[in-house]
Length: 465
Ligand code: FAD
Image (cartoon, rainbow, N blue to C red; front, side):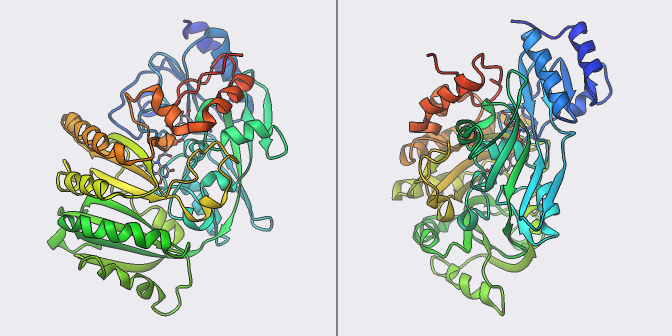
């Protein structure tokens, strides 16, 4: 295995317009700090790419040296896939730009952009791309994994709005993948993760979303069984204008929650309503929250869509300890209800949580084999996150997450959203993510990256032919 030496760094410095940052340079610690502070890796060098030419030059050095290569988008991956010890990081963070075409209702997005960049630029035209629930997440990793959030029931997964992607391939060539151009690559990019190339820009279809109805309902955690049994029937039958993810959590210590419930363990639903907000329509739609049990607190408000997208940013900033695992669910069995209830009561820290994100509605209208996403029949994508600021609690949150997952997994569909696979999970989990699509993905990998240059990801090794 090769590595990065002074000559390689010098050739990067000569070829790139963007900064090349090594351990001796100012900015090195900033470059290697990612969202999950549990990950502490020391790459040999960061190639901070400003354009396609920089990406091509960096890949050329990676091929020539045989160095371990990671591609960094927003740096939000739980297992820290954007960093490699002693290797070369192709850092896309300088490529944060967005261009909205309001006439055509499309948006082009640089490969290093964050979700908030897209929300901000698109909102000026009353438009949005369906994506994730936090503005600081990278467009790159989220989209390549599939992408789900508040608008999924209404407009589908993020990949369902992807029209094309500009990609630099392992051999340095540049292609635009779309339904017409390199359709096999375009299929694989929509869910197959970072396996196939460096996406320098994404083009998405935009959808109307300006002011949305936002609501948060919390019930005491001992009412989890009644609430979950009600939620599992109510949400899938609700109009696609309504989404609501279920959570177990501790109430955040701030507004809008009354002080009397700060820090208390609760189960909750965070709602987003894209229907008509005239009069007290939102309150009427959500009058049902009293059915399972009286809420400890229920709050509704109209909000600009970017307001909803940034609602959790301050609560869970960069720099916390994270350990997570996930699974897909097509139903929530009584046995699963019991597991959620038990681990909800046993939340180890104030920020640890479990979310069930709806992935039905519009996401179900895309054909099972039309994209690499292999769970069009799932109704929820679940994630268990052990979260805490204190590194001394790292083992506590990891163990809670692993135990919760082990008890819940038998009641799941068997595989997880690729972006919710945690650290120290096995290659079997990647196979379970892609089910019947795995072999086709391995063939596309063979066609576009036969030497597995892009392997710092949830890796799909090239098929041997
Ligand atoms: P990175 O760590 O930079 O990259 C992740 C992987 O993608 C790496 O393998 C990297 O090489 C690859 N990659 C990134 N950009 C590119 C590119 N341009 N070209 C090629 N490869 C690239 N997911 C959801 O779907 N919905 C949510 O609501 C959601 N909420 C989240 C909230 C939090 C707080 C966190 C931490 C994560 C959340 N996620 C959510 C998961 C998120 O989708 C993944 O963590 C995703 O990997 C983040 O992408 P990134 O670009 O920020 O990550």
